Image 1 (cartoon, one colour):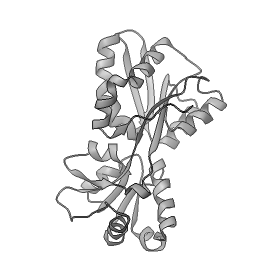
Image 2 (tube, rainbow, N blue to C red; image 1 turned 180 degrees about the vertical axis):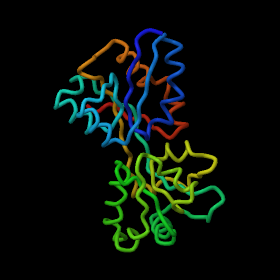
Image 3 (cartoon, rainbow, N blue to C red; image 1 turned 45 degrees about the vertical axis):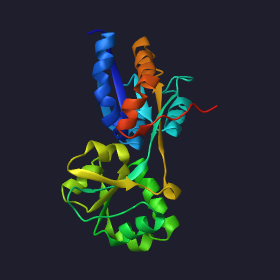
Length: 233
């Protein structure tokens, strides 16, 4: 192996990216060491000096890291977007979330609901409860989950339902099932971009960025719950 690329990314994209790394290493002779955290933690650790060559996180966080000099200006590239979904333990009670009414009914009738209290998805969900007027009724049933284990919490019996990016739900099968994505009217797509470290700016990192951006991967990514997001103009 030649140079080792330090890839630092959000937990939500890990199930999609990890299976692709081996083919990249085989094709290039490079090796990739990956580290995964929740989006806010990715930014915070980089700002504390966490080494990285390539990062995958929310576009706004990439822009912040560019402004403060951690990310190479002009290197930001779109990766994809993930829908929010609702998960349950396989074999558990049946729920529907295919309409606003069904979604609200599920939240009101669930015994407990896990959410990523320190993640991007958790922030959106708690804000959504406020907008729907459900905060007073539902928040007492919320189970905060740290460290990106929200989907698997239902398999462990820590909550009856979980709200989390679809990628994490699909990756937790067969113990966890995807009841469905949020209704279209309530859906929030969590966006992700790629960017190169200003400190290293290696050719190897750019090769990995180009690989992960390639249309050749679109089908594989879609199967894991990631939809490609067009470049903003």
